[in-house]
Length: 217
Image (tube, rainbow, N blue to C red):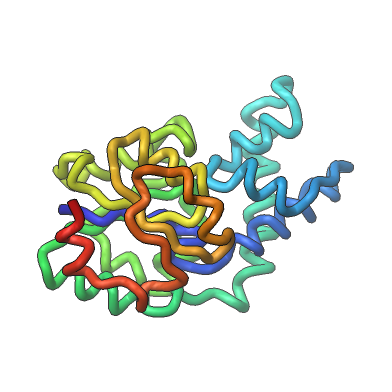
């Protein structure tokens, strides 16, 4: 059995800062978007996918790399003073580890943001493997990042439970053949009612019991 965690919005409650930094970034470049619609359309996608979609197919890979660096630096500046793990997270993963559950992170974040979150909060030590945007070609809702994590853990996808905060991530888990637990840091429970792979919807990790999840059919 394995638990696979999305990072942004699931390990740390930061998605509002991601959205705000994206909106500020695009405003610098002459584009404006509605915050709620932007989140729903992009949460789980890789930064380079968002940039190419919003700025057009003619943008070069080199230009994307420069712009992605600009946006991610803005995000880290905005979120840094507020950075912390979601309530109950560390106790939950410690309990899971004690029961023999393998643990992974599967995120659309680039390497610098993974270091910013997992290493600077001393959370990487909890995980057997970490898979990010540099490890797969496509972001969510494609299942690649979750399947890559399961493969590195040596666990059948059907024996994995994904922890997510965004519909695109839950859809990626569904396509990977994995059950999902939703943490409602950014959207209400009603946003996930349509997914048949969701087994729990909670506000934070103190509402979860590892033993109960392991017994979920």
